[in-house]
Length: 170
Image (cartoon, rainbow, N blue to C red; front, side, top):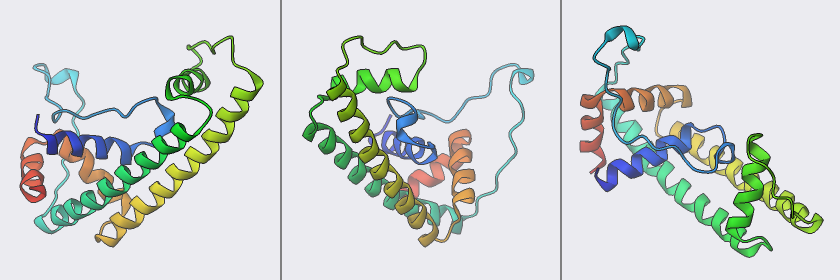
């Protein structure tokens, strides 16, 4: 997989996610979804038509979205590093707080819980600001967010559309 493809996959996953704190890591789209051999196994996805102008707009928006995500990820990493919790401890506590199947560490102190709560509030704020900036970038590129998401989904399902986008992103 090319670096561009991996970056685009991470960006799409991040932008389409409700919040990066809904899961410990971004899901990645490695390749467009391949249809199973048995057509009965896959519901028919509606065909999304994307003209060249929209694809250019999408490519421009993706470049901006990528910059915003890189910046927000750097801010998040810096805030975790500056906190009293190390990244591993933050992840342990966070995983337990978002997944009822993960047991909370028994040795969480009141100080750690307070630090986690405060840090999470700060990280959610960074994520919300990034989401607003990404929405503005999409709109500034001439697309609404719903159409951007439709195109993003279509790109993951359509090899030809993926190739057309890749040509514009290079």
